Length: 221
Image (tube, rainbow, N blue to C red):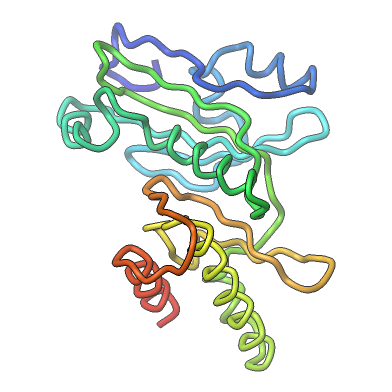
């Protein structure tokens, strides 16, 4: 197991959506194999997770793995995502599917896997198609002032559209917005929204919408 003391935890796919034969064969090895470190280029690594980029056939994918290596780690998230609740990986996939279904740019979630024992989450993995873009926290500082102002104007419109559609991100940092080229100018791709909440579509004057703007403002500052 990729989690040292996860004996008895059972891995299973909650989602495995791939039409390409090469990707189907890759996923058929099981979520533990797909999640294992050292299978691709490591983008990020911490004590409780890692992100890898892999090429499977002609397609690129990001594989994000969350681990809860100790009982304390598992119990810390009991009321959020580690016991009889959707994992962070599953919530991220739900957000991506919601966004894509409503015309927002977001990576396609390909697979979600979890390892649980007696309902307690030991590890989870999310596989998404790779999107070529630059996180806004890296893109904005490199721009000339006039270009930055134009991008920020588009960003305000993008977040307003998200809110009017009923989406409250609760994780609206610049690093979680990719700046990508578009046919009519730059576009934004939303990633990493495991804490999202849905509200009734329409004018967004609620506390969660204001909190999104405040968090984004703090990230911009």
